[in-house]
Image (tube, rainbow, N blue to C red):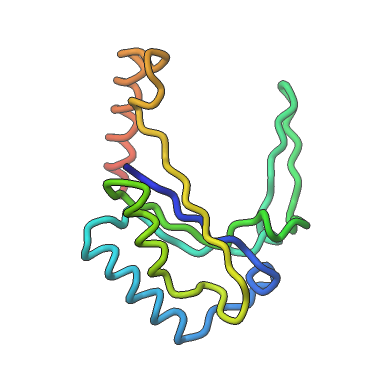
Length: 142
């Protein structure tokens, strides 16, 4: 089972305040534990929403909205993608994260990633083959 671990943004992360050396070291140690346990697939911090954009879809129309975005509590400051046996195991890993926003209340969200089997019959054998080809090609990327 794959899980996306989402670190919620706060005013400091949205202002571009960089983590301290101590926090970077603690996060590095945590990331190393994830890698050594064989569960980490990816993990990164994100630039503030002021450097981002959203694309709004309305029928065939696309509208680009440049950041920053107002609702800080709904924004993401970073993420991990992990592969574990259960949601309980994902929770146990998340409980070990060094507080990503020291001195403030921080929220970390855990969301399971869909797997091919979750889509049932709608994911036909042809679509499964297409998905497998796409994943294989993406894995070849240097």
